Image (tube, rainbow, N blue to C red; front, top):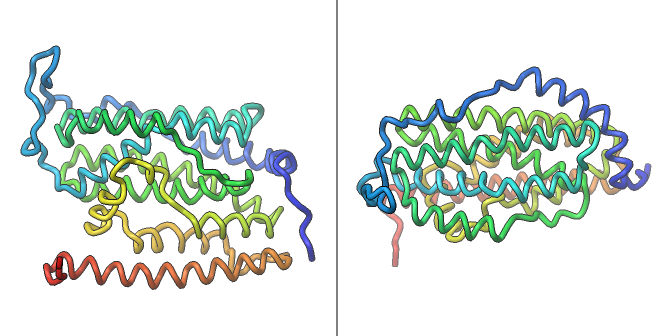
Length: 312
């Protein structure tokens, strides 16, 4: 069986009822929260500058370096919301249920950067000057996935929301600060609800356009990069984050890729044509390769942490 091409207009039209249903479910489950209530303001003090406070120095941060790296990456990723909004608004549209979702998602996401920035400033967790310089560079560059179709975008945001949920959750668990853990758990809960919306939509798309969706999902997973990958110095920060187990290949496999493929039942999806079966094979190979890479990375980081890896 050969599946007819699924153009953007057709996908938008046929998935509109799913968007309406999933949006209603999301609004029933979502809990509004106030960012200012999650910031330890009593720990804050003025910085140098017009208020003539105290300049930041590294010894003021009580957080481990990998946690600082994770906070910087997570915060700068959230800062690029204008680019993300533009991309999904362009792809999904601003009318009807699609448009209602786009704006609701944007409003919820906008809390994250403001709350995280207030937290790291109040705790003096990271260098505020470097953070602002990085923000300017990152947001001025913007973000564009370059994905070819609307279905690719839908697959990407599903994977990305799940990955972002885990990145925030693990950074909070590793920070050793109850206020930070509570805030990042709250943000992760938002990301989880967003992921559930997109995953439900992707599941409905899979039932309608199995070949198209599996091909897009295989493409996205094969080339997946976190939305913060363009942050200056990202590779070094990501290596330290991975070495600390906050977000590494094993986390990506066990908490993102494997549960997504299992929930969507992609390896047993019915009604596939040649393209869909080929995509299934690619997804199977991807999981095998990711498993092997994760095992090698675990061994490498274990040797690094044990101090047995030669630096020569």
